[in-house]
Length: 590
Image 1 (tube, one colour):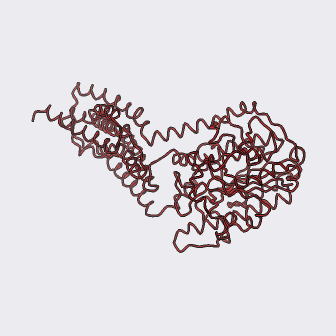
Image 2 (cartoon, helix red, strand yellow):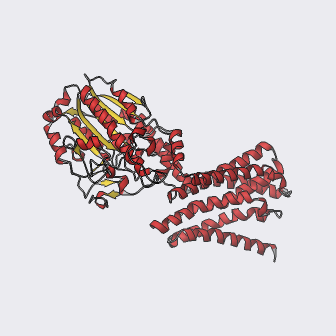
Image 3 (cartoon, helix red, strand yellow):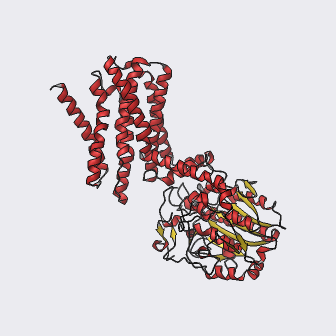
């Protein structure tokens, strides 16, 4: 067969493989997309086959690692998206991932040939294989993520990764099965061994003959294809695109500090009167973690007694049995709960007034006591709001939530105090959230997830009792508010893309002192009347504004449970990033 016919055949086979795979994992793309991508993969196939056309010495057996990396980048994300579409529908289309594999192969092959011929130095080879290692980590991590959670990476998952600190990461790894961890570390170890074994592989390449013409072509092709691969295609692949988008989110969040003073200039607050306008008193808001009311006796009598103190206070406290979280994860839930931004008004976090801003304008000294720590390599929206407090402290005298009680002893009872306490609550791993003396239930299996979860709820109940009783006795307590950032399903391992309603069904209760109720009867009556109303915790900001008994250009009474004007019903209350209607909750008949 003439060489030119053989080259055409090779090109057509490679093109058919690339485009055929794309079509297989991209059903229902439509005629326009078919035509567009059929043309897009022509230069991709040409780039992939160019080393074969250019060098008669070319053989795939000398580029096994380059081929493996290219296949991983081309196949991983598109195939996982395709598998997800088989389960949940959708029309996946990830052409840039598929094209990346083709261009990456050409880039790596040309680089290896030029290293062999002109740059056979240890430092150059080490750099080349370090690049291979980095290129390996992304698709393999994506595969491990899929095997763990059953779906590919999403914005929620990436946000959790960005926000995880070393201690939390270590704790999460300890919760994984040894089989999963063994598989992950085995994959990584195997590749590292292959990489180091390949350190000398360049010298085993045949002596590629680079004529002046071939050298010029190589020196043009390598920079051009490499630049296109690493600066145009890879940023548009699914995994990297999500990472870049998440980084962009955090960059926008960081503008909060820059824009905060500007936004505050527009804030106007007036007191409606009542005791809060003139007397020393304390309002405490406790933010729980991963508490689901489905497992709490105070909310459902059929449960085991997981809330002995709260159950005993049902006649004195207001328990809201139709409260939901606006998100399945902490950061999106609390950035909305703590500010006027919610999934109804669609305001931006970095241009929103916070609960702390309102409390300060109402004349309160503000405190933030957290047992969660500052999270991740970025400041979270939560931390940014916390740091606007007059006093902000992380950690206490114990790793358990009881350790925050010591901070309450530093609060002056003769002042007006607004205190936020952010506890660990029932954060995974549940068995790390309570002292051993609170282990009431055990499970017959080795994980003990549900038993440990219930034990953590009992401990949280006791912690809340201690906070409440100290404040009631020592701090002129006017109001005590507790809600959880989101819920969880203890029967399932943690999933950043949880979508079930059980992860949205949160507890909310409010205590009002007799003095508060006497001086603010309209608010007390409204809260009592709204006790069975539907509520999402991105409206916590408006609830607190109502309890503060203020008027403001940044407070919407219709969004406050503390107002008779509260407008939300089962038909218009949203949860889960605004994507869920609470009327679809299958647990409504509990």
